[in-house]
Length: 151
Image 1 (cartoon, rainbow, N blue to C red):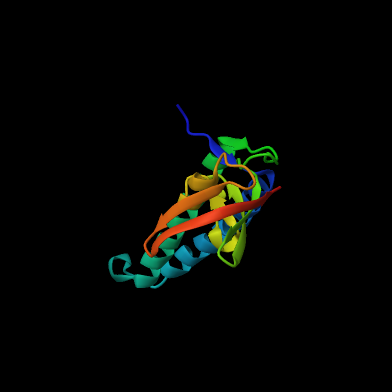
Image 2: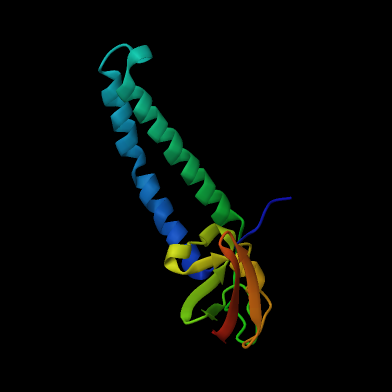
């Protein structure tokens, strides 16, 4: 059974854009390999090895994105009554307030404010309502977040 990847419509667009850029780099990488071959003996050719490694990384990422897009399950707009996939949730702990969008693991990027439903914070708040609290154990101890809003 194939794995379904839960992604938002925006996440799908971003992956499609990245895939287009990566496919556009194929010619550049092939050219690097051809130029490196001209340096002679391939057994001791660092440029050739580096170009082949670049090609392998590029092709791996292309295959990964194609698999994700082929098996994508688009997340509908999140619920406004409880935290679910696609929900934008505002959390408060002490005097600090943070806002996250709960997404699937494929498009999670905490620096961009996107947390996975499988992350510690995502798991703790998933299914909760405004006013509920969620406790998360961190290396520095327990942190309790209060859900301020869901949109």
